Amino acid sequence: MANSKRTLFLKRRMRVRNKLRAVNAGRMRLSIHRSNKNISVQLIDDVNGVTLAAASSLEKDLGVVGKNNIDAAKVVGAAIAERAKKAGVSSAYFDRGGFLFHGKVKALADAAREAGLQI
Image (cartoon, rainbow, N blue to C red):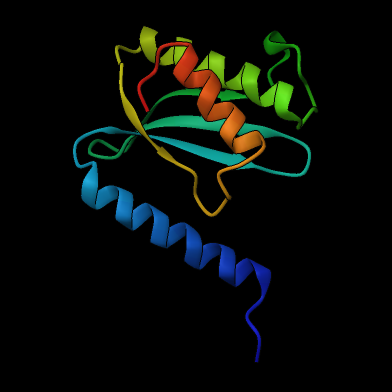
């Protein structure tokens, strides 16, 4: 019996997350979620179980409400880098989850790097 797309996605997400946890102990995690209509990202402190900063294309302040394209990902990436600096975080590791690192996911990561966040 073939695995469903969702099952394969969940396996890939856990594989990526477990490898990153082993290498980046003690650093903050920049976790991304991409849906068909929006893109969002969170800066998470796994030791304390707290979200330090978040950004999403659903926020009206960013001006990309309801969009899920590369331009929206760049805006969200720059916003999370700015909010991470305000929270006192200069470096984090990038948790792409089960999403492939190309297109919108890559654009968000590159924009966060350009804005000064080390990932």
